[in-house]
Amino acid sequence: MERPDFFELKNGEKVKLPFSNQEYNNRVSKLRKIMSDNKLNMILLTSMHNIAYYTGFIYCSFGRPYGCVITEKKIVTISANIDASQPWRRSHCDNIIYTDWKRDNFLKAIVSIIGRDEPPKNIGVEEDHLTLDIMKKVKSIFSFSNFSDIAKDLMKLRMIKSEEEIEIIKNGARIADLGAEEIVKYIKPGETEIEIAIHGRDRMEREIVKTYPNAEYMDTWVWFQSGINTDGAHNPKTNRKLKEGDILSLNTFPMISGYYTALERTLFLRSVDDESLKAWEANVKVHKRGLKLIKPGAKCSDICKELNELYAELGYLQYRTFGYGHSFGVLSHFYGREAGLELREDIETILEPNMVISMEPMIMIPEGKPGAGGYREHDIMILGTNAAENITKFPFGPEHNIVKAS
Image (cartoon, rainbow, N blue to C red; front, side, top):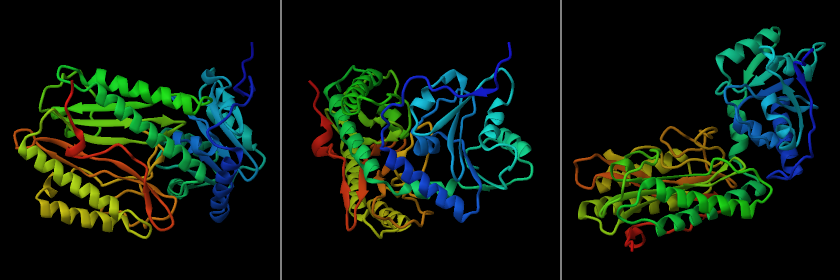
């Protein structure tokens, strides 16, 4: 039996995607403008976030390569046979499936889309994602082509959100609040981080299903940390049991069709000692100042400078751990980042309308020092024409988040 290297399969019907066809067409048109400006004949996307952004399909690699070829007239995803027709159903464009009966059928599928008669002279790739192995092989089949990195150009396009994107982000923030409200119900001495987190995750996933009944559901998660486990912002939840006086870090992350939102709050269980209260109030003060600084025309590095000065004035700058905020969109803890829109000292980006960015100051006081633990608050801001809208509604600070627990 002769098995094909690649094939097409339209099994079932196209499904409703998170965005309209017009939204995807607008995105591809802007991408083709970049192609024209840079005299590119073809772009090969390989990252989860950019393939999702331009086609609607979120792949699960499991060690296999995935791609999307974009030319002046074509846009085609390339997926592994293990996924069958799901990539075609879940994208607004065409799809080619490669088989794994032979090595490197992924590359043959790329060639099948553009043909061998007129190989592309200039090809755009994502150098921040493409592996050295795949890059070497792609260069071997397009040996007369020139390659250019387009990752930063695509990132800049993603930094400005459409109205449809903003709607999903607003729903994500609302659902994150619901997850936090559910979590607080179960905080009490003797309960474990993992069991508390499960309640918040389940509440959010059910709300996502209710709000987006035609979506696929994956990757929504909660990090609920206590005690020393609060020292890192991305520390996984554990089986640690809570006890009275614990510092707590509540983090809810609903994922809607690849779009990430977040809510993060510091809490204490029943009581808080004086030194912890002092540190918490200092971080809240920085958070409030930061929320006021986020507005159109502000420079990311200038916001950091002013907040660093406030931390220094309060005596906590030495405990600051990371940047003050970041962009939102197609990203998660597995993929994606819009590094050009982060509140860090080395980012000179000017905030513009339709950007979405968090304010999330964090300090970490090491174990053995008064007030030990990690303190973090996190709100999401949408930039408008003249101001910014805070779409996070869950309250923060000592007056709200010392959990009495029944």
